[in-house]
Image (cartoon, rainbow, N blue to C red; front, side, top):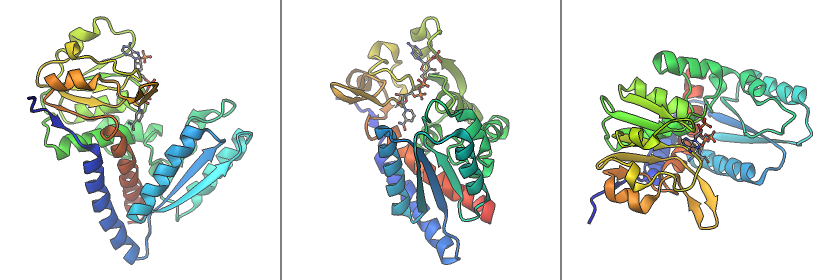
Length: 283
Ligand code: NDP
């Protein structure tokens, strides 16, 4: 029987939420309640679900959450005006504009308008720059949540070969930077990588952020590797990760399941970022 450790993101997220809840309670007693405002443009059903998860999570830990729903037809200027208003509002610690936005709106412009110290998604260039330079600032929630899993399961990162499949701005690139910050030797693979397997077979820590169901198979994985599956793929066989779980689990030392691995950590980290933004801005 395999001794593979299942990295339980639900459990870690619960622990993290309990810790956040405690700090929020103390702050609230001092008259400061952290606040997150989410802007949702249009009626994308997936976005509505994600936003409702975020609102529920805020409620669980005592963070004030406020949802601003705007029609899909809103023009860019009006949306930027709304962001500016929140930038000035002292009771708002975190601003999150749920992506994707309708095509006529420039996402980059919207992200760049959010005050960097309220950018709880960690997408603003200032936060990305800070991460590159010294690891400070507000960090993208999914990779930061993955680091939290690695820490809490006491998985050593220093000196390890970490291979990331995927180079998106929200997962792959910040993931690489965070692992580098903790002294891993990092390789980033993508759709133009030649001989992908040659790289993945060297990975002590393999992060799959591809967006293709069961893309990583057992033959691509080194025995004893730690496997982090970021993928969320809705298929006719249900929700699947980017890793072929059953086969890969037999070779891995540790693996995150889908669901119940990285997903819950993304939301817990959003709460942590909101708390951090509040503490840093309002002392
Ligand atoms: P993107 O589509 O932005 O990026 C996918 C990356 O995979 C790209 O860099 C792409 O390369 C690379 N890729 C695609 N095909 C191949 C291939 N055949 N070989 C090697 N690399 C390949 O996705 P995201 O980073 O936003 O998300 C990745 C997955 O994670 C998705 O399933 C998404 O749903 C999930 N996700 C889960 C979250 C969670 O909370 N659990 C949060 C965010 C995302 P190239 O750049 O060359 O195109």
